[in-house]
Image (spheres, rainbow, N blue to C red):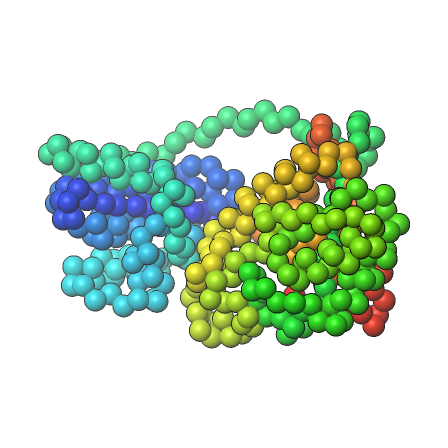
Length: 378
């Protein structure tokens, strides 16, 4: 079985050029366990040289632990884009380092590169700063450690609510995806662009509203984007309620990919698309990563539960936020997002208990639409 790892690497100098050093860590991609960490001062060098030296050390450490598949995460956009082939290596000092790193890459089964913000690369950054401090003090310093396996933590298991009766009253979320839009028909990226519903989409919203009158609903909460708000207004009118907006439930910002098809994005940004598909930490060009969306949606979820504890709430939102809520309810990993499909105006239902996890009661139900109103779009 191949070992999948994440390499986090960084480097820097005090002065650029100046006293320089690098740091890198290797983690098991499936468990997050720290497998190795390396760092060293390298005398006087530039930031970019130190960053490449951190990458090379991280790749070598990944080889040393027997890795076959590697995801490299760095906050150096230059190194990531040069190693991904997006940018050319123009500086003479970088070419031998890039060649050395490329030679290491070829020794693995697969290597991908992802640019991450500095705050998501803190371990490698800390090691690099320790190395720079040593270099600035004129000390020869390096660190190579393979941590001892940590004892398995004792994890308190959540009670299996699918099998036993929970206590209290849950907050029930009726998760309704908005109705059809021109972009959903053509399966185009539809994020923060404020498109309206089609006539068919409005009919879907009315059909969903009619179905939701069978529930004892206390509130209707909507993403502020027009397509969701139009859907929510139809539901609220049928239920005799007002709509409140929750900005955290807006769709992912797809940046420059907005309005394009998957094929068009792949043609224009092939490497960025590959990185985006490989990691939820990678954002579309000029957009928002799924990891950032997960955090935002969690805040929106908590706000809805706090405001409507023990009630039944219609939540009108979009593909990614609804999938995120379902993933969170299932306590599923991030890649579960790619294993779900939601039709326009589909209904999913989750219960959120105050004394435990959530339960998914319904997923992507379009029975209220009928065959004439079902749109098999994104």
